[in-house]
Amino acid sequence: MALVSVLTVLLTISRLSSGFLIDYDCPLGCSDTRCTSLGCSNCQVGFCIYYSDTHRTTICTPDCGKGKFCSAVNFCSDCHVDHCDVCTDSRTCKECDSFYYLRDNNRCVTSFECERGSSIATTRNGIQVCETCHVQDCKRCIQTNPDRCEECEYFKYLDSSGSIDQCRSRSSCELFHGDPQSTGGKYVCLKN
Image: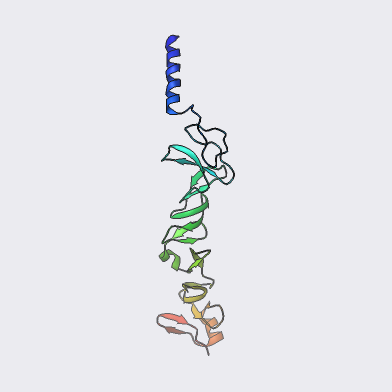
């Protein structure tokens, strides 16, 4: 029985010396009244619980940092979108790492991947995004304007006569403009 009491005392001293039972002032953003060396267990509104490897404790932070987001239960969690810098949940990206472009809020792609049928544009407060080309059957949009097509898909002819480009079939091109032409390897509807 005395051995159990000695072990209990030693375990209590060990816990005290490692800080488990010692109260500390809570860090900024913590809603707990007292904290242990393990850190904060509840954060104020606008803060999120984050485990700091540096301090080996949980802290409250207003920003979870690159590649993380504040979950519905107020814990900093990882984004599951490759090359995402800022996300709103595990699968929705708001901003990609440098040299990547946001496509459909769930993928970060290179400029090469963004080109086919899309226009690379810097929009949404300077965030690089892949904006889908507005011209149906367009193989490659003009980089600065999603309403303008540089080249149509195979067997389609580019008609640039209106405010929005169109990729037409050969018969549609002939109906509106006469004989379609091939110029520089691209098929175009020539204006009459």
